[in-house]
Length: 76
Image (cartoon, rainbow, N blue to C red):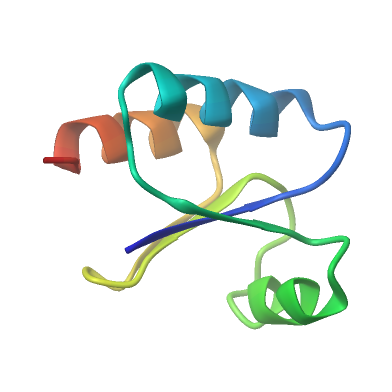
C-alpha cells in the first residue's frame, strides 16, 4: 500500500497527487495537520513533504519527482 504524507498549501504535494490521479495510482493520503500522521511521518525521519511510504516494499522517499516515477513504474 502506498501512503502519501502531505501538507496544506504544498505545490509539490499537489504535483504528486495530480500525477497519481492522472495515472490512476491507488494510495492513501495522510495530511500532517493531523498530529497522529505528523508523528508517524516523523518516525521515518521525514523533513519535507510530500513523503511516500510503500508498506509492501518497505520503501520511503521524499522527492516529488522520485515519488511520481516510483509509483507510476511500480503500480499495476
